[in-house]
Image 1 (tube, rainbow, N blue to C red):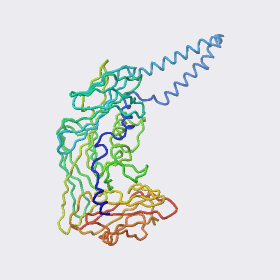
Image 2: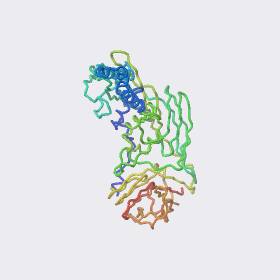
Image 3: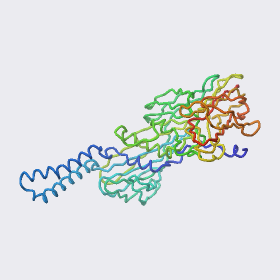
Image 4: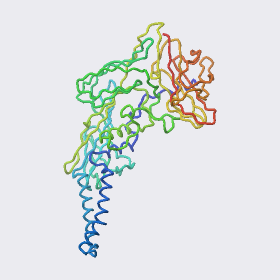
Length: 490
């Protein structure tokens, strides 16, 4: 246990810190171009029915009235060729007659740095078979997009890298095809003056307070503040504009201490980042989803590494622009450009203890991070939210985001929920007794909130709490939520 505590550590590096992680999402975002979607299902069915009707009954009726049914061997091929021409005309009209360069970017802005890391995706779409020369200046390097389907051509290209940038001299795109290019580099950081603090008040929930001022020349669209509290929507933040931040940690949940995939988490336990930004973890192209929204969703999915990865316990300002942070050049005929850029601004808030000696300090679940404590056993999904126990057990550890210092434990409340259930939970629940260095089995608990007796035994010196859940029954048990609220005396 000593070595686990000392060596385990936590990862504050979110999944997107090393660039794109989900190449299927990246390719889907590149293929999302205005005007290139499939026609509506009703139009396709209507065209097919019209074709069948004219080639079949209408053609037969006209020939019979003219007593020329023997001419069907001429009329049918003519109609087939005519409708084929109509389809080709509609296709070329839909695809357009100019290539499209789709530029997608992820820009990470870190506190106190003059340079921001840029990870970009460039898709070259062509309505006709054509060979291009693609060039990009600046301190950027390139690689081909991994060949992972969704319509992007992942063939290898000869990339010529120089001090002034790089070029791809024979970039061949098939009819209606798309070639993908991955780029990375650095740009001067946009300036955001951020002054945020997490204020811990006596006898009330902590709050995230402060101000964010946009001192850059960017307009961030659909800006959202992601933290342990509920996400705060700001809309657009124009250059020179200041916004006030006030987010309460009441009703929020503990965040994963490990950014990225958590071992033990099953396939249906997902992170809330996509929900916080788009209202859903899954999105499909439909009439109710705009092209830009779908492109943004897949770009964020590519950066996050999929819906099962956690962003960890960091605080971020996320916003969008329709300007690329780099310039590209495509040879040949004139082309269209479409740009979507995701800015992720990392924030380091200050912790302010607005309490005096003897004051009560309430830490709701949103002020905690969680991780696995022991390897799960049996058929389980080891997570405090949307967990599952078929057979076996799993244990978790919860610890405050910031060290508490010298405090006395007053109350420890366990929150145990299962999709509206009440009554006995049928779970064997144990808490780690720090005074005895062993697991202590609690009396049979019911779903809901439970105040733990003798709470000081189950809270470590740094505010850590450990819990083990075990299913000893013959039926599976779903755990919607298991976490803690801790009340301390300063």
